[in-house]
Amino acid sequence: MESNRFAYWKGYLQIRIKSGCPERFFNICASKNIRIWEIHSVGEEYEGFILIRDFKKLLSVVRKTSTKLSIRNRCGFPFFLRNCRKRKGYVIGFLFFFFILYYSSCHIWEIHMEGNRIYSNDILMDYLKTCGVVSGMKKSKVSCPEIERLLRNQYEDITWVSASIAGSRLFIRIQENTDIEFYYEENPAAADLIADHDAVITSIITRSGTPLVKKGDEVKKGDILVSSEVVIFDDFGSEMRREYVQADADILGEVLYSYQDRQAYLYEYKQYTGNETNGYAVTFGNKRLFLWVLPVQYEAFDCVSDLSEIRLGANFYLPISLEKWYYKEYAVYQGEYSKEEAEQILLERKNQNFQNFIEKGLQIIKNDVKIAIEKNEAVASGTVVVQQKIGARIGQNSTEYREEHSFEGTEESFQKIE
Image 1: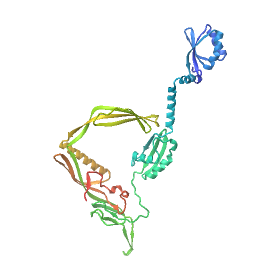
Image 2: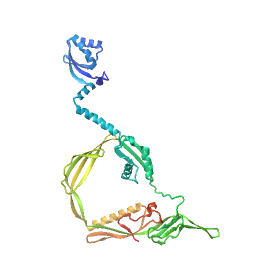
Image 3: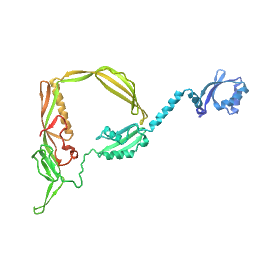
Image 4: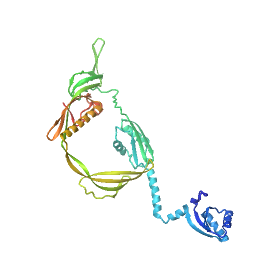
């Protein structure tokens, strides 16, 4: 069979030969250029393979040599096509499979993002959706340079964007500016720097404007810390003129907050019973078809789905995915913490809150939080002195201030004392 490379596409037969003089039969075939390969004996007979076109020439040789010839098997592409005519469902399925492959190769089925930290995938995907960039869109309608331009213009913290297509996936790689910097107008409007908290000033470094407070001063919310008015004196100490600038300074102050947290002794928890019902679904693009879902008879249950995307290779995703749904029954029970356990829970939450503030660059100067054991609950309460940046410009929107200026509302357990 290997003697003819194109035998499969031309079609060939497996034949059995019975002749009283096989040597004469094969010699005549050779003289007429009739090729028979992989000849082997089967008892007193012989078997081999022959092309369809040579089989027609073989009939005259059979009559001349009184040879009996039988066809054992039909092989090759021509016979495959003839068999397909009898199996229309097989042919339709075969053609439909290639249609799905072609259709999938012309669309984007997954949008993959990398490098984004400030903006979540949901935020970026929602914005791209408003711009018409969605899963399932045609590749011909995807403009990678346009996607890069849209993201850079929409989000100031995104400094670099690269969009590329691989298979049926759209890759968007993002680089963000994690260093928070604030730029002011070249000719800023005059503005005073005022206190946004009641505080005791611990440090002040003025860059522009006239400082009105110094280290150790107590200030109230709304007091002017740095004035926008700057008096210009001549060499003799006489006032020449007054200029008005946008006040700017780094000011640290100690701010007093109240802390309160509670933990009840009684609590509820859920425990799975082991009863489970499964459901199955197939997703075509954005359409979901449930194949098998039984009515859920549980009073309380959790629903979890396991999604399996079908893909060919690493980047060629098909618009078909399989889902398996798990409905797990659970029962709700009531538990009770001991006083020691409730106290430990409050202590761990307090330590975690303080650690979060430290990670944000805030310094806890004094911690006067105590835990009291009461009849039905444990209560953590007290005051905390925090050193933080203070100061806000009059008339400026709070989103334009430095993030470090605001500490209020960071944790529910903290409340600023006015």
